[in-house]
Image 1 (cartoon, rainbow, N blue to C red):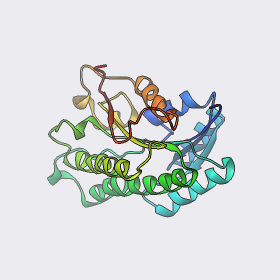
Image 2 (cartoon, helix red, strand yellow):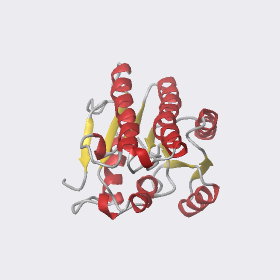
Image 3 (cartoon, rainbow, N blue to C red):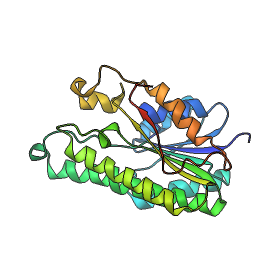
Image 4 (cartoon, rainbow, N blue to C red):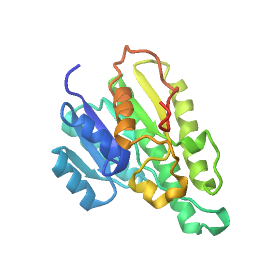
Length: 231
């Protein structure tokens, strides 16, 4: 299908950055992040488009997608990689941190899906890949807010996938286990399994899903890979 256009939400570090790196040599990539210096550095390093976007703001998400469409006319795929860690016993979490986790992991995911699907439906094709978490399928102590907010995204994927009524628009999710990323550094080594996948390995699977053609196999709504290193 030649060069295509992809938006990587949370593409300035970790898995999102690994996804952008795999795509950028052959495709047009727009990286979205909420730290201006990081967005500028990644855009310069990869030679791709960059846009400052706090996903908790619907207006910023809407305007970021509109800018990509204005620039490239089409969006072939979206990788929703933005996420906020909120670990710790519920009693120990501040109301501010709880609110921010909900704003990014739940509201932000909703806004990204809303705008992504708006443009994919307008075009009549495209892929949306949500990066969930293995914690959704395997409860772990000490992460009630993180797991709850990531479970929200997973539920959203399943409902929206069913609502498309077409294989031309695929809504998919991938649940990585703990990986050595910046988010993992914030989590702490106690949550890093003895067996784990590297961001580059998981990114290859994300890219495979993003590159699925409209007439490829129907996988919308499926949990395609339990990417915790146990391949």
